[in-house]
Structures are given as C-alpha cells and as structure tokens.
Length: 149
Image 1 (cartoon, rainbow, N blue to C red):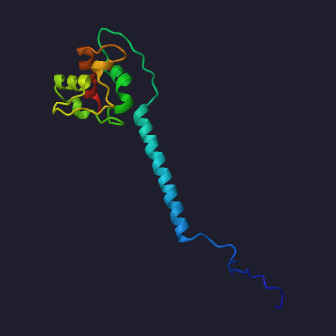
Image 2 (cartoon, helix red, strand yellow):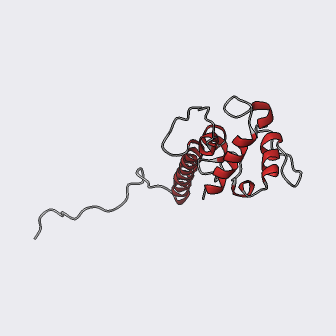
Image 3 (cartoon, rainbow, N blue to C red):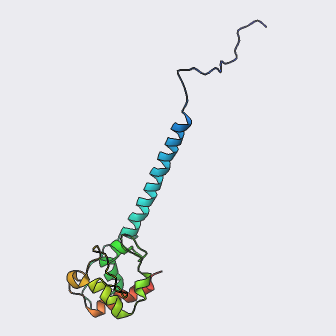
C-alpha cells in the first residue's frame, strides 16, 4: 500500500501555543474571587432587604406591634430575622432587662456602659416611624426580638 499517508500530523504549531500554568491560575483565581464576591453580595442584600419584599406602613394602633416596628425601623441594618447585617445580631440585646434594652435603643448605651456606634440611631432623637417612641413600643419591640430564631 503505497497510497497517501492519512495519519494526522500531531506536531504542535509554534504559533498556536496553549495557556501557561500561570495564566490558568490567574483565570481560576479571577473566577473564584468573582463568584465569592457575588455570593457575599447576594447574602448581604438578602440580610438587608429581608425576604418577600413586604412594604411596611406605619399604623397607629392602641397596642404596638413589635414586628411592624422592627421591620420599619431595625431590619434594614440588623437583618430581617435580627441575625445581623450592617448592625450586630440582636439575640443578646433581646435578653437584656427592659430598662437596659430601652437605654440602649433610646440613648445608645449598652448595659456594660459601652456606647453604640454612630450608625445606630438614637431613638430618643429620631423616634420610631417618625413619632416619639413610647415605653409600650419599646416593650413590644423587645418582646418581638425574643421570638426570633
């Protein structure tokens, strides 16, 4: 058999080189960093926005609703379930004695005398839902926090 040789030429063409190990490593690092940043941003956004995208409307009721107060005034920083976000988780403050909780919320001072960060609004100055906060509202807010996981 003296016909033409149909065996493919597997000799690499020097002008068509592949990626170097360094280039592949840089690409993998880039993809990993991008995915990690995306996941972190998504989770942070969920924590800030909560779930369901509910709109909260201020209602002047005779019995304050702690969940409504929390959703309208606290969840944006502390997370929809009080798990923390820009602000800390609220499991420990929920267990404070009522006067300590009220002092922290109203004046920004913890039971151990630590001043809360400037980002935390002083409810004594800004109120709840645009109105002066009442002791009943603060009690309802703390009781609601005790129900969170």
